[in-house]
Image 1 (cartoon, rainbow, N blue to C red):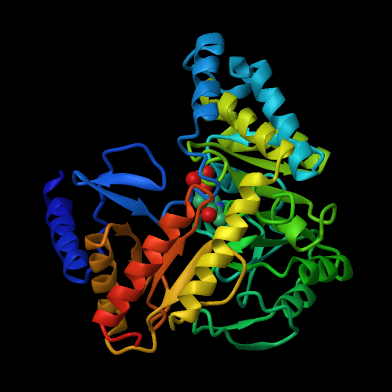
Image 2 (image 1 turned 60 degrees about the vertical axis):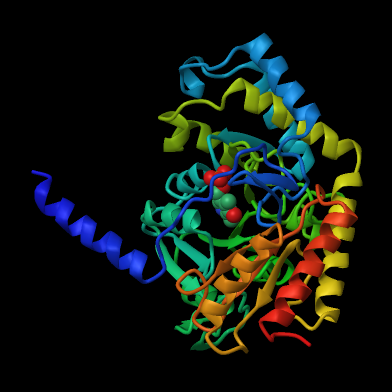
Length: 413
Ligand SMILES: *Cc1c(COP(=O)(O)O)cnc(C)c1O
């Protein structure tokens, strides 16, 4: 009988709407790119994960068309029954080479890859040690696994126990957790490569050092960096100079790498082999569609042959960060194209951030405000994401709009 839960849901939906937490979708009436159409009005998009501007790239569209012509629309099968084509193997090989890992296994999404990766490797005699700010899919993957769990304070490498300023909760540093987990059979440290709210980058050198000292594996989810972080765009392991020291990388094709869908686990040969035999989202969910595989191969080829796009993204990011900081905005410093513009020091910062984002849309700039519970209380922000798809005039238009609205709302002089 649906009646009782219907009443409950109706009430709860009103509650989250009243609290300003209801997720309203904004409808885009164009392809994804720097310039999009929202409600019939053209505007500049500064909140997509389209870091390399590839979402509507003509070469990718061509490659996707070509695979539809040659390998069809769908496979109606999981990989091990009759869902593996030559192109799936080609993509896995190319991703392994690009990331500098031994082997790769594809999933429908990185969410699936993270849901898959922990459970077959670790049991109740083992330990997972996970950053407090890791992505929801890592958290869910860990929930599906019987291993014992330690949550370490965000990016805190130390042998301490204290309050984590990122979460406001009392917790421990990574080294303390590793010490406590020494009696377990296997240990695995799990971290995002880049944390999506602040755009800060995991301290992979220290993490790898501790992993070696305390005999642990390291898994990095590089969804917000594959394709552009590091000087040839391999990811945070290149950026932090720890290539070869990471055991497992999970990542997505749904962000910088074309933005359609798909993900993977890339790592040590035996681990990937084990996943092909044990990972449940791989064994019991459909194969990646040929069009997506074909376009993803094209992306890896593009990025392997030239650093032009990631270089442009790096320059765009530097330019935007410098101009905005000079204008007087409070920006969390860093190198990542996620640029958080912080509102915490102003009164009624949550409301102010929303009002600011609305006014930006009037100026033709599409940005989003984030408030509690997505970010801690008092850390309200507008999160800008820079893309290689942005041209100088796009960046200038956004900066001008920020300055105009910032003055209107009394935030800057
Ligand atoms: C976006 C994201 C995912 C999910 O990727 P999908 O391929 O869209 O499922 C997983 N992990 C992190 C860190 C992400 O940012």
